[in-house]
Image (cartoon, rainbow, N blue to C red; front, side, top):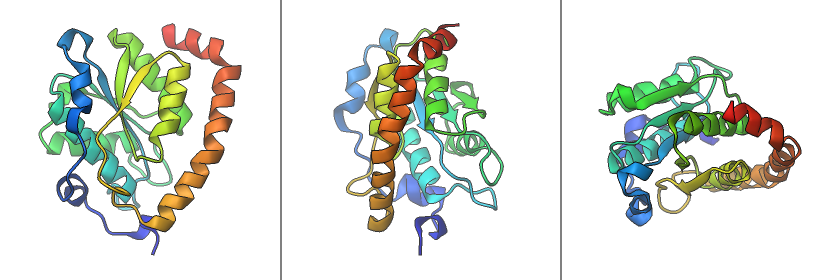
Length: 203
């Protein structure tokens, strides 16, 4: 059975594991240099529930939101194969777990990692912030941080579950190999079009 077919609820993803928050959040005190939290999307099931990957990322975002209660939260992800949008599913889950709606901003236009990175950089610029906490799976975070760094955005990885973070070994290996291809591809695009991206970000 593939990960996409695994039955994973949000409560299982967000409550049954101990997230590795630790000292990572202490890097972002005091409040005047507060970061934003950016949650990167993943697939939504045909019935509108989050896939296992999306449920994990929501869980990581919840942990970060609890640790840094003042930070705004960008939920990034358009409508994929199934609706509603990844961002709206994330936002609904965060609100259901007690996150204040005023903290949550939706990016429902980004359809891939690079678009989400651009949206995150633009969001930070609009808020007058210079850094963000990246909430995604461990295999995905290096690409996100590399792309944001190329655009001048300081980042730190958000909470992560121990070990493989609930992913099956086969899926983890598959995604790691995909990232090995995606990193140089996306980075090449960013470097080639960096000036245009920065102009769009800074408006």
